[in-house]
Length: 362
Image 1 (cartoon, one colour):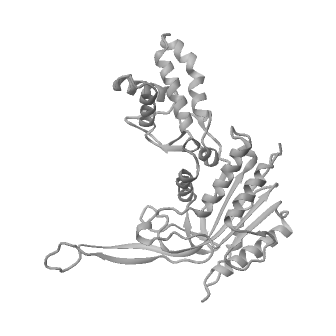
Image 2 (cartoon, one colour; image 1 turned 135 degrees about the vertical axis):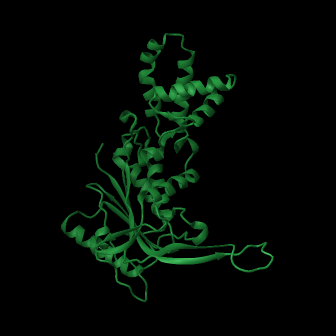
Image 3 (tube, one colour; image 1 turned 90 degrees about the vertical axis):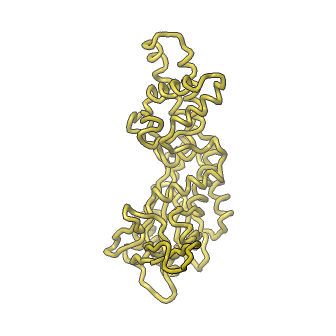
């Protein structure tokens, strides 16, 4: 099998007045790039939005739980497998399993977030029940089950765990390397945050004077450049079959294109879709084209969309002409005219063709 096959996804997307991703003060996140202030949405925010979309796209046993409450999940699974056991016994078995498998428990919840697949959860519960029923001495049981705890938590990772990875500080042996990377997206142009002053009226205020509540919300609007990549070769080295790898990549690309972080959605309803998506399959290395916007796109009365497409495509041509070969395959989905050397398709066609291409990788 070849070692290298990368699916790169480049997206341009306009976002109206919104606060998609807040910092610790409640302000929309920003970054200075190319000497100017840009709107920013963190990779963590967009990856969570993608994982939430996976729930609608993938079967339940293909996605995992990222939670501090592993203990309760384990208790629920233990009750499912051993309904005749007493509640206090189940709780004790769960606590022993968490400690033995080095998923440290802090009271009813875990100290930090832990990523676990539904298959791993069931495997852990089964090992825990076998451990409880074993009549050997504690020392003998610890020796006998030492590897089995790790095997339960390392076997059959979920698709989202394989894509986004798992880091377990309590035991590096439980780590799972991510096969996908998602960049912090930034606006292609300079941005200044604005403030919305709002008042809320009290519906049951008899004298009708004043406001029931006043406040401010900080927001901005922007045209964003978003980038993500999937290492297909690394996915093939996992426990997934060829069809499962193809479905995972297809799901990743679709979720990256269609998802939107949930920050302040009720206030701004900023659920837009991209106006430009460029997807490539490369055999050398993934390439983030954010350098196209190191010089901020200039403000015009026609907006930023067309000029952002031109800046991106001009930059790609320079990169392909000087530093890297053109991709093995490329597709573009665009609402506007485009000059890029790529097959122009609809999103549905893009997903089908990327999936088919990934399936032929050997």
